[in-house]
Length: 236
Ligand code: F6R
Image (cartoon, rainbow, N blue to C red):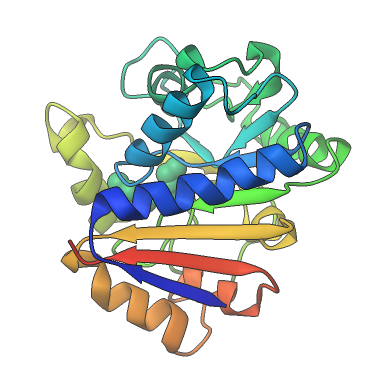
């Protein structure tokens, strides 16, 4: 594991964006696994800046996102599809047909999950997976539990995740209670994993996840077994 501590969110964003840019430069048709939430916003700003300056080309790049709320379609400004469009996709030259986010409104969610994993396989797997980490140790929406769940699946969000994500909604009551999430399988099969954690509040869970026992009670802890893991942490 390559554990990098930096002193500010800006440095975290630059450092992580550089690693993503390096991946795209070395393999323009790579598959990027992307995340939402507050942590990657600075990274996406940097990627937009470099793309606009002509230094980074996404025209051959494919993206697969980690997760989506159930019941929110891409027109809903709280959906993760909407987030990706407004924070990144609409501002860079990635082709719309090359961006995948799970469909949380699929009539048959079990089929959607199966198809999502099959698509990742067809694409040749993920070259670089970007992850944030929840205060409870979740990655994607793989919540703490009794076992690591490998395939893409539907999950009941834990109370602490609902509370943490309420800041993005008008009220806690509006936070969807379920989500579709890529499972631990596709994440662990990614050739590289880049996890970012920002802020004092994440310090304890980062300690547990990367320097404590590997347990499904802390889903991110499984990443200790990944052969190419980089963690960028800022306490700011
Ligand atoms: C988002 C995701 C989540 C977040 C995590 C941290 O696609 O999968 O695991 O990465 O909840 O969120 P922030 O960055 O808002 O603290």
